[in-house]
Amino acid sequence: MTTTAPRRPVRIGNASAFYGDRFSALEDLVEGGEIDVVTGDYLAELTMLILWKAARKPTGAGYARTFPRQFARVARRCAERGIKVVVNAGGLDPAGMAAHIREIIAEQGLNLRVAHVEGDDLMPRLAELRAEYPFRNLDTGRALADAGSEPVSANAYLGGWGIAAALTHGADVVIAPRVTDAALVVGAGAWWHGWARTDFDALAGAVAAGHIIECGPQATGGNYANLPEITDRRFPGSPIAELAADGSFVITKHPGTGGLVSPGTVIAQLLYEVDSPIYPNPDVVARFDALTVTQDGPGRVRVSGTTGSPPPALLKVAMNRIGGYRNTMTMVLTGLDIEEKARWATDLLLDTLGGVEQFDDVDIQLLRYDRPDPTCFAEATAHLRITVKHRDRAPVDRAFSDAVLELFVGGYAGFHTTTPPTSATEFGVYWPTTVPATEVTHVVVHADGSWEAVPHCPHTDDRWTGVVAPAPEPDGTPTDFGPRTRAPLGAIVAARSGDKGGKANVGLWTDTDRRWKWLRAHLSTERFRALVPEAAGYEIRRYEFANLRALNFVIVGFLGEGVASCTRTDPQAKGLGEFVRAVHTDIPEVLLEPVGHTALTAAAPLHRAGS
Image 1 (cartoon, one colour):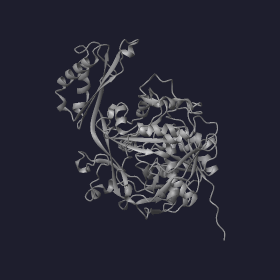
Image 2: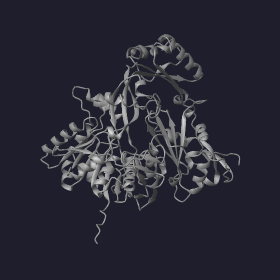
Image 3: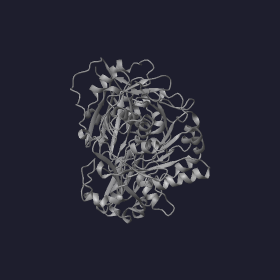
Image 4: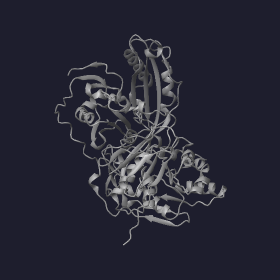
């Protein structure tokens, strides 16, 4: 009896984290060393709305227009070396993108086959589907009929099997629409290793690999909390996943490139924009609480042990609505009586405008940058940031911003603004929902024009549909590590934060078992709420990733109705993790002592707290 040895790991490099990412990354990745597949993620949740607006323009297109220019610079090299290209840059028009790529290939006299994926776009059938399904918002539970405006885009998140089918059929370039971020790697891995639809552990490993490299250099030192650990501060090289047949993989990057690949950079990305450790995808439910992260040599981190189970019977759908119009003006307050000046300015402005009832929403934020006894002008200033929204443009257009300027000589002392009067802008509202997978026809259009329907997984498991129960709260058992010191949480804890629609997440992890024992016991939901006062009034879900020595806090509704409509100064919660690290709490002194080459130890503690 003979057996076929597993194929070597496939080297998959990701060159794009979003539409607008580093233009040279694709060329740098292709030219920098050996890879088998290059992927590119261009579709953040906001991007579908951006592409819808672009497609409405006379010369617009519903796809990521930077990718064709990037591809033109590497097409010949990919053809020479047999590198497959898999991107979701097709956006709302994957067929149009595929045609554009074929033109580039023809102009260069190359023989590359281009396929594209379709089936995610629900808009042509939305009226029919709405008669059957309420399309409830996953964050709020509201039915779409109660939303107040109609969707302009509605795209189901497809999995990776359409990509796998295209590659198996001989495609060199695969243009995808709204697939999950991890689907690019899942499809490439399934094609390379010949996985079956029920190889759930291997597929789960591919999901983990795809999730880690989807945001490009965020896995190789970008946006990384442990600043002292990054000794090479050139722009980070793009991440590469060496994905094996069993779903284990190594994260690395090309030699000689900037940044860092360490267990910390990998853990940071595993915790990015997730809820619970149970991570549903259209092809598999991956368990991030089962995997292990270990150093595998310089610049190499191995991830293994990810387990998987059948996917849910529902697909996530990203809808976007036009919420109306908005305008923001920021007034600068200087010196003494900051709060009184802010109240006076607000009262004067709203009286001039006819009251808050003239708007659908008014958001007022007093941002305090001032301090007593300032040593420079910046230390004496605060910002009063007022945002108004309305379904119609006129109430929030120049009528609003000009009214702010009327306070220039009739309001508080020192009045000025950060900008001249501005015009209103249209804003979108993100609406996450679901649809049965059976209502979505996943299609591949091959390079020869033939059409192939891709069946959904024959097995489903709805145990993880909906909200996964948070971890039990710490039982209050004292954790006696001796005397404590008031110090920033970031002295021994790293963080990565981000957005998912209206939710914000903060992943926090540490580097030793003792520190993890303390962190797990210390940081309850209520203590987290106390550390982050802005989270008061929001539902907070606390999840444990014991295998990563990590906690993940999900703040539901913190970002309103998503980045396009959010009025916070950090609408994607990118800085929230760094804020949490900066907040002081009582930390055992013994845990603040350096551990080996740890980079989590911060400056010396400020003062001792009670023991």
